[in-house]
Length: 39
Length: 577
Image (cartoon, rainbow over all chains, first blue to last red; front, side, top):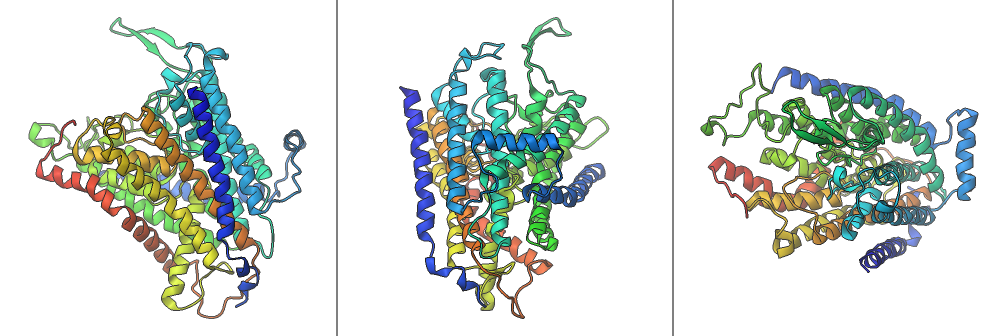
């Protein structure tokens, strides 16, 4: 039972990390690159 | 302090500096695929790709790279957890150790997959040889390779122009493991065996001592684990006492070699960075910033430990250096290492993300403890772990050029890349996650009965033990202040959360930065742009690191080591809780 709880915790942690990838992607301003490197 | 102590430190700094260029160049060739390999190695590498179904010619965008990394380590955590839980049913368990408790197995699995190596267990009484070799040692290799891979992906982000990809995670991890970690570890393991570190699959030895008593001598495949433990920035020892154990660090020479191994890859990666962005001076500027911070911290630790403890002379304890003793604060230190090497080891292991110890940090003077904690709190950018030190330093570079841009009224730029809101937002996400977990969890443990139950010291020192534990976890260092009983469900689970977030919630925004930078075209620098390869930039970078780190953690440090230092001067002692 405890093993199942630990595996659920591991799964939740990685789900959060995958969600974090999506979160970071959405934080980006889509209009800011690559053209913004014009001086 | 003694002249031979300083001489040892000078030799160490000279050796590391000498190795930066050749090893950095070699690693650049490895990760850029420019290494001329003998046919058997090419066959081996391609065989790994075929077995894994990886196309080495296919590059990944930052999202794919991040998801590949996360899936790789999900498998790693589950495998290491299962190995510990099932070890009593598996071979290579001569002592017949039983299954590791679930919360401890989870903590250990997260710890080694995140390159932290926080150990709530004593290796020689908990893990079978199979768990040590196929679990701990394998993850030391793979977590280290991941750190280097992320740093290389970020370098590609700085170096590439209008690209959609930052490399292939599987190829990077494979090449770094095969051509950097394995060969250097093999040589290091042979050096350690020569020095007296055991390497055997045999059972423990039942020995009769000179006094006629009976003693069980723990041993196992120590040298092979020891080598990658140090090289990888991982730090998890075979024995509970880590490198203070005579079978992990048997001689002063082995101790010195271990310190060199800890800094080897992290320092050399600055040169890899310089080569890959096309200007080695940029790498030397980062190395110089690391050196300034390292030498400042080391000077404090060495001076504090050599001066000794002011509470001892009134008790008639002699602390002066003499022909028969090292002098200074020798509590918790090995006589064969003395003050200088213990101070050097402690500073190196906390400046890097290694976390191996050859002395008990709990027994260091309060201001030394402050430096050790500060090294980790500064995101371990002072050389740092292989890869993690460099990408941490580059986060501070982004913040520094952003601040410099604000001060002089120019658009921030670095290496021909305009630093925009995207990079600054991601850098701040990565830099804030570690203090959030350190301070939040330390505060919780300092007020909750389950947290206080683990303490062996009252007052500021007890708080330092808690603060050190979460700092070590979230910064993925893994060294322990000791004195704190962390093998409880509360500490095992909260430290696992700190280690997980401190590793993966930092890596994801870094890969995001790599992705956004790679898409940019080259910015033509106008006259008046701040050069980033000179002393002025090094000073700005060091100032940014100290101020950001100092302002974030100063209140917590005031409650712990700073309060303890002044209490010690006043002669106040707090005893046990």
